[in-house]
Length: 250
Image 1: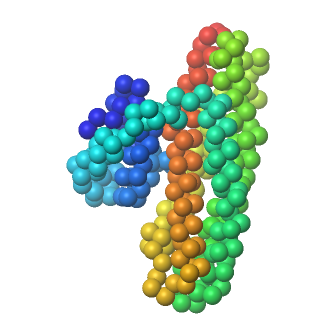
Image 2: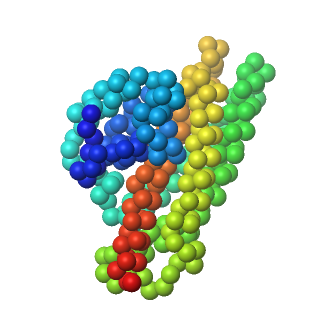
């Protein structure tokens, strides 16, 4: 199987998805974390989860074969400041808009069905933690990290370097912090997936119960995409750009 990223053969799951985002559907199918743990090799994950690597590679190749060539590398080629703005406008906004709705659904379902389904209380507590942590996390990105990335993009465009160093040192410092927080959310999402039996409502679930699982599933999928764009595309490109600019200045 050959999935190219700027003519280079990918070595990690994150790079495979960065090269062609349609492959994310295959990784979701097998509950393979391509965002927070996208640094792993497919062979290692298949061995760990006892999955048939040949089958997964075949499905990945089928996704690539059906892809439209013009959009495969859209995110990877987008200017960094535009990509940062897109993440805020689409993914940060999505999180902020959907937390209150999902919280109301899960609270109601736990109240009505919690006695018969005790896992609902843990699901609710996990989502409350997720909402609180993501809210703080996004504020830090928007106030500190993303403005720094946009300054780098502007410096490259104007070819005039940075006027002064970042107060936090190199870009890797806040990025490492954000990636650690992403890992926490990835683990929380994996636990939610487990508790909900992959978002499958029980037979006695009412309409609200079923809708809450559907919306939670959508929220987790959006979160995986959100983290993937940052961990596997935005952050690595920003670090490389900082090195390039610093080399030119020296």
